[in-house]
Length: 233
Ligand SMILES: C[S@@+](CC[C@H](N)C(=O)[O-])C[C@H]1O[C@@H](n2cnc3c(N)ncnc32)[C@H](O)[C@@H]1O
Figure (tube, rainbow, N blue to C red):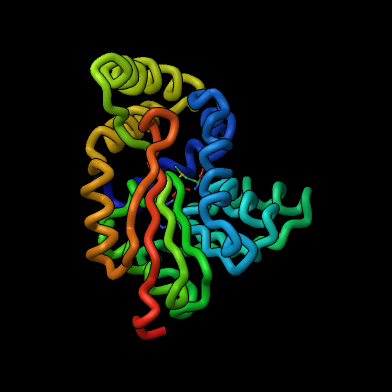
């Protein structure tokens, strides 16, 4: 895992093409995945949401459309700069803050939901990131982690890996103008733990009722967990 400064400068370089490539490379399915997170949150989606590693804001904005008040946190100003015009266009109740997932600028137990989409894969200490998310939700509040995964299956699995390790980095690096960003994406997704392993890590971070849902044949995975009612607020 590269240093935080390297991660930040990589996202600063690709911020301008990030949204376009997200939608192109996933054929628009990434929007559906974020909407699924909001649907999974159910009624809680209208509470206070902390969107960690919010980047250009799409997950937090989706929660705000469902009625939530949202705080989005990211440590790359260039990404946050792309989020602001979207929030203003729809006048949605989202506050974007510069900050680190490993030291969230939010008091204990203030959020009903903490979520992260395609972000925690990039942090140097995943356990600490999960513990931070568990800290900022109230007892009974929920934590959601949306990430790429490696789809199972003897035909679809290898086909997908061919796309992800071969075509996607070549196309992504070309369009973003960056030598490495989309090769980095492929490398980190291939090194990402399987769903059961991440579920165990979420349990170790103090969450209960943890589980996951594979999305689009396992290309992505939505993890969830709840802060125990008995835990100190
Ligand atoms: C792949 S983007 C995901 C953006 C957004 N969540 C989405 O769904 O499109 C990853 C984001 O995580 C941010 N990030 C990575 N490590 C971080 C950290 N430790 N603290 C805060 N933000 C971080 C990067 O700046 C980048 O904007």
